[in-house]
Image 1 (cartoon, rainbow, N blue to C red):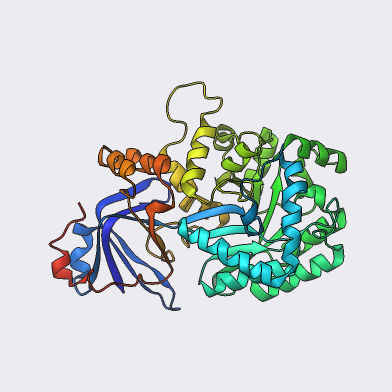
Image 2 (image 1 turned 60 degrees about the vertical axis):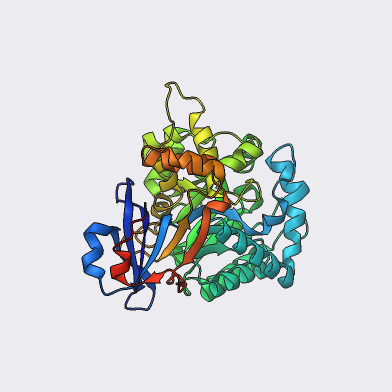
Length: 446
């Protein structure tokens, strides 16, 4: 086992932040050999229990759970910041041409490496990820994630109509390829498969029925798609599926709403849609930088909280403008302000952080597995430096409480705050910091 002494951020079962200014995190193998959190809490409360261990001291640092990105496109890594008038022109002019290149396994593998480098550099240790319609893209995604021992969820895109040559797939073969990928990769090591219709307008009824049949056959897979992102898209879906009450209702008719269903965006909803999300156990992936960049609209946080369905935060790269969870949380804060009738903070900083870690894990059905630093969770964690830049150091030094500290990092932070991402294994212990427990006991993290 390995012990770490630093400040410690984690969450209770109700989503409240727990913070130990002087904390101890103990990591070690479980019965299956996985590195998990064995214990976590205040140094004073735990020190005597672990006096037999050497301790890594990390003064001035915060240990926090790895971030979870609930919706991201790895093949769109190279089109971040591509200008467009809106979602549908952006897809035609940038997304589909870029994605057509992923029929090439070598290109898929090269971009997958860049993608995972960027995720980890920004502290994201779990993501729910679109590949492209090409099986080679999904193979490259899973192979790279497996080599890095990451907990990742992904899937081949299904899109058999209203798509250009190069990304449009064939209905029957697309479903055969999806099942083959499920059988090859789902629940292998730390990997999970997501059945991935791109969005209803790009899928025939036969393809959507087939996706629903696969979801029923493999009930512990995820379902990952888009809904109600853009007003033109909503109108298009209404024309194509006139029998459905709403865009979201389209998916109900094909058996694609259940627990472990992840719906990106969910902007143009009414309360019936929100109740449908709650009743089916589906979750929304809120993508504020993408929605602002493409002018799609504003997620209704008040409506989601009032009705009570699950949601978490997502970057939506490449419509999203950054891999950084700090940028995503700040954009969510801005969006939460929209339409406020009362002054004050729209979303508490600790809640923003929870929605990108333990709250996202809850939405995905992975609570108690990732996104937290409570005993039993897989040991994916970050070493954060709250003094990573001169201005951030100046601001965090003046924080009077946890909310001010977290908000300073949200507003001023970027990848420089992420000193190290530790992925389900003991952190390599440099000789100069590995010290006997007795010596560590004489050192505080202040």
